[in-house]
Amino acid sequence: QVQLIESGGGLVQAGDSLRLSCAASERTFSTYVRGWFRQSPGKEREFVARISGSDGSTTYADSVKGRFTISRDNAKNTVYLQMNSLKPEDTAVYYCAAYETARGKYAYWGQGTQVTVSS
Image (tube, rainbow, N blue to C red; front, side):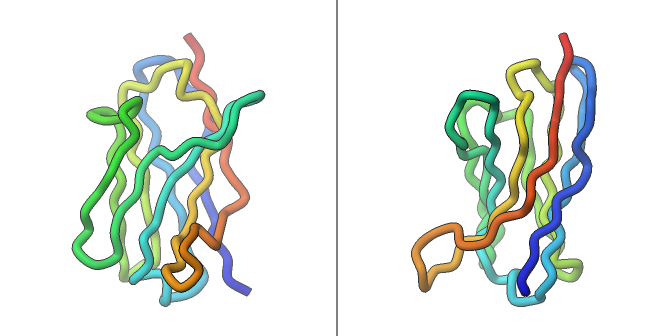
């Protein structure tokens, strides 16, 4: 069974940095668009960042642009989210996902990792 496993979450103070990792269980995902999403209590899940499987192009939500960086290591089937200058409003459960073109959606999701930023 295909799995995406996130790690790297934790409790930090405002202004600190964290790096999240998302490891895929299958090499197939090296060609997939991979994304990061987050969900805060009482809010809908929102898009954070994505990276293409072909040319490595990236897209970010306005709220994280300039502070977060998404990258991937296809040899390790792993995607990263480097988060700098963290703010209390970045507190959320962060999920990684893989986009399946044939289904036209993010079809694979990790279990989530908690990021808490204290002020």
